[in-house]
Image (cartoon, rainbow, N blue to C red; front, side, top):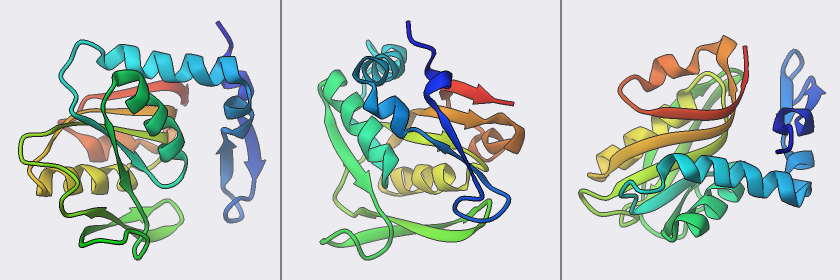
Length: 172
């Protein structure tokens, strides 16, 4: 087993001064480590009914699409405003360094669909809380939320109360 944490690179002062960005590209470059990370996430949800995996722009697309492939289900993209070509539903949220919005196609899922949401990183929880709101607004059920990395010291889980959360790597 590869030490996944050893493949995460710290980039100081990105995207703003004072932020230490957790860069997953060295992990993605290592085929065995990438495969291991996806398999560990998928293993948590195998045997449970998952209708689709939702991934958040942009790194959540990479991990989420690979997880969807492993689970044998479809992939749902959530993007920044103006990037999806059809009718959308939007949710706004606060970041640790500002605010933003996300959008999903209004027909991305059906009432009762069981959705696994996957992203690269849990920080303050605002982005993921917005995604949960989008899924639930369309009548879907969030069966789980999975992250490659969690910055536990930022208490992002507090914004996700009532949802099952799984993280592979935790920074306290």
